[in-house]
Every structure is written in C-alpha cells, then in structure tokens.
Amino acid sequence: MRLHAEVLDEMEGEGEEGSVMASAALSPPLIGAVPTAPRLVVGYALTKKKVKSFLQPKLLQLARKNGISFVSIDESLPLSEQGPFDVILHKITSKEWQQVLEDYHEEHPEVTVLDPPNAIEHLNNRQSMLEEVADLNLSNFYGEVFAPRQLVITKDPSSIPTAVAMAGLTLPLVAKPLVVDGTSKGHELYLAYDEASLSMLHPPLVLQEFINHGGILFKVYIIGETVHVVRRFSLPDVNTYDLLNNVGVYRLPRVSCAAASADGADLDPLIAELPPRPLLEKLGRELRGRLGLRLFNIDMIRELGTKDRYYIIDINYFPGVVALLSLSFIPCYGKMPGYEHIFTDFLLSLAQSKYKNCECKVQTDSARQVSSRMTMTTDKDILVLCPCRYRVFNADTNAMEFQLAPSVDTRTRQHANFLFQLLSMDLGLSDDQAFRVHHCRCGSR
Ligand SMILES: Nc1ncnc2c1ncn2[C@@H]1O[C@H](COP(=O)(O)OP(=O)(O)OP(=O)(O)O)[C@@H](O)[C@H]1O
Ligand SMILES: O=P(O)(O)O[C@H]1[C@H](OP(=O)(O)O)[C@@H](OP(=O)(O)O)[C@@H](O)[C@@H](O)[C@@H]1OP(=O)(O)O
Image 1 (tube, protein in one colour):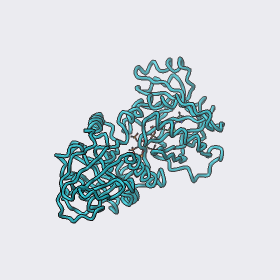
Image 2 (spheres, helix red, strand yellow):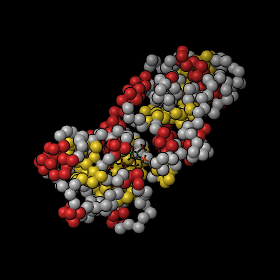
Image 3 (cartoon, protein in one colour):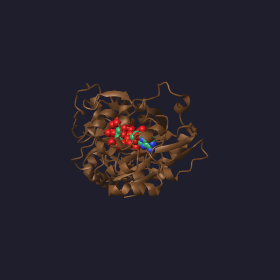
Image 4 (cartoon, protein in one colour):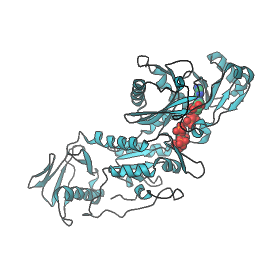
C-alpha cells in the first residue's frame, strides 16, 4: 500500500546486530488488492540511534496490532513523494529539515507533524527553553515550580565573573552550552565553584545556580495527555565544605546517560517521594499548551530540605525511552518502562481526535446506506463527499479507512486503491470491479 517506503514492521524479530531498518520497498498498489490497511501511518525521520532505541520490537508489535504502521522517511527524497502519512514523527535538528517539514505542512495540513519544528527549536536553546517555566504560577497546586536563576553569556569569557557578581548569582554554578543541537557537545556541562575560574569557560553558555536536591531527579514524560514520572539518580549535593575547599571548573559526567532508574533504590523517603500527581498534571497541561508540544520531558528536582519547592532544570524534546550501549546500540535498560503502551495509546488518540469531526460519504446510485455516514451511488462511479478534503473514515469505529489527497489526478491510482479497500471490505465488492474516483465535493479546494 505504501510507495517508496521502508516499512519497519519487517524489522520485528531481527537480531540486535541486524541492520537498523529492513528495506521493503513495495510495488505500487494494484486496484483490487485485498486490504490490510493500517489505520494510522506514522512516517518517521530519526537518527539511527533513535530508531534503534525507540522502535523496539515490542512497540512495533503492539502498534501493528492496533493498526499503526511506522514508515521510514528518506530525507534525501522529496517528502511529498513519500507517504501518504497521517503523522510525521521526527527529531532531526537541521535547518534544511525544518524547512522541508514547514513546506510539507503548508501543503498537507491534514498530516500531524509531531511536533512543529519551531516549537522544538524553542527547546534547543537553554535560554528560551525555561522561559515558560519562569512564567508559570502553580503555587495553588500542591507545590511551587521555578526555573533556577540563570545568566546567558554569549561572548568574552573574561567578563563572566563581573557579570555573575552583578546578577547576584550564588555559587556553585552549572555551566551549560547555550545551544542543544543533538550532539554530545551540547551536553558538556561544568560545575564552577568560584567566580574567578568562570573566565575559563567557553561561551555561548548559560550559568545556572546549582540547587541541592538529594541526588534524585524526577523525569516527567509528557506524551500527549499522559504524564508519566520516573526517578533518576542525579548529581550529588554540594555542601559548604565542598564549596570552601574547591576552586575551578569541573566537567560533569553525563548523569542522564549513565544512571539507570532510581525507582527501585533504597532512598530516603523524603527525597524519593514523587511530586504530587495534581501538580504534575497541571504542569503537563500548562507546558503542553505554552510550548505547543506533545512529546517532551521535563527534568525536575525538589530543593533539598523542602517539601514542595521544585525546579525545572531541563526540557528535552522526544527524550530517550530505552538506553542503548553506546557503540553497539544494544538496548541495556528501559528508561521509561511500558512506553510502548503509552505511545500506542497516544498515536491512536491522535487518529481519533483528528477524525471525530469529519463527516464523509461514499455514494452509489442505488443510494445504499453502508454505515451511518457512507452511501454508494454506483459500483462503477464512486462519489466521495469529504468535508475534511482528504480523509474518509469509518464512522462506526472512528478510524480512518483511506486517504483522499487533494491532487486526485496524480494520485488517482493510490486513492482508487484506498477506496477499493474500503468498498471491498464494507460492501463486499469483487476484486475486478472498476471504478472512478471523483474530486472531493466538500468545496474546500
Ligand atoms: N541547576 C541545577 N542544579 C542542580 N543540578 C543540576 C542543575 N542543572 C543540571 N543539574 C544536574 O546536571 C544534570 C544534567 O543537566 P541538564 O539536564 O541540564 O543537562 P543536559 O545536557 O541537557 O542533560 P540530558 O542529557 O538529560 O539532556 C542533571 O540531570 C542534574 O543532575
Ligand atoms: O539517547 P538517550 O536515550 O540518552 O536520550 C537522550 C536524548 O538523545 P536521543 O534523542 O538521541 O535519544 C537527548 O537528545 P538530544 O538533546 O541529544 O537531542 C536528550 O533528550 C537527553 O535528555 C536524552 O537522555 P535522557 O534525558 O532521556 O536520559
């Protein structure tokens, strides 16, 4: 059913050493082919590492059972020649890709782009990343949430000590690269104990006050409407002794990559206690709206010695769900156990919310009612009335049954195939019945 595509379902059961994707370019659809139509086609543009960690066999299996298929996008080919897709899932940061997606979205507003490139871009800069957090006012919701005080330095390292003193920031400070560009450089962090040493750092960067938090971090995943939290080990606290006896800047280990879940660890209950659910729900809702994103996580810490003062120190777009051994890409532990269920539900919810307001009709001249919203006019002459322009869905199940793209001429064959699938399923048409596809009559094009 898909053209020019690699279908990842084929990868299931493949050994760990196998290639990242199985190539299964399918031949063009034949009218009359018996349908095994997925209800939701998710095109993905991800790094090899991300494909390996995210598209685990368990997810693929569960998704397939639910009518979702994942199709690899070839970034070297025009996007409009690939698909059709219902959803595009991506985490590629290049400007070229952003432009490709923006152009595609103009042309295909019916396709859900997860998420808009400009909203993701907002997270790729540590100054803009926490702006929305600073504006939040969640004090009525079982806790307060802040962003650490921070200063942006774009040039001249020698000016940093003065700038820090003028801003009144308290040491120690965490120095983080200003831009998170998906490379390991973007995650090179330093801890600075004294003001003078700050001039050894390399701008552009942000300097953030270090908040003691008992060495435990709450990783809050926001996946659509779902908010899921896990505990992770984090950096240890810095005490007065450390502060008085250390000078200089120290490179920090990439704790997020090294540390497995702290959920089963024997922890001080006051430190381990998860943030209250209502706070997390409200936070998730607020940030989802303010950031315009549906797939991200927040790294949240609770200030040591407090019960309800939280700081958000980092927000990541489409974070890792399974940790891989770095060279071999072999999965070593789940960062977000059960993610396959949450993601499958999320993708299904996208399909449902999208089509629930559409009303489509397929008619024959016998005006035979097929379902509450489908009618046939003639076996050979199928009229598609489609207020949503491109889509026809099964009104009984609320699931998309086929797509009708606007440029019928160039895609007639494909549309016809979709239609045939629908009709042969719902009406029991024989395989060789010919038909024509008419333009969408919803008047929107
Ligand atoms: N302001 C802070 N106070 C205390 N600890 C901090 C602070 N900022 C960062 N950390 C510690 O440093 C770690 C890495 O920080 P951060 O998440 O900002 O970097 P990152 O490079 O974006 O990490 P990731 O790999 O998770 O994306 C955190 O998990 C936490 O342990
Ligand atoms: O690869 P990992 O599983 O470590 O996931 C990391 C993810 O890399 P990936 O996008 O290649 O998966 C990172 O993305 P970039 O900022 O580098 O784009 C970032 O989101 C980290 O916070 C994730 O680590 P986590 O915070 O979940 O521990």
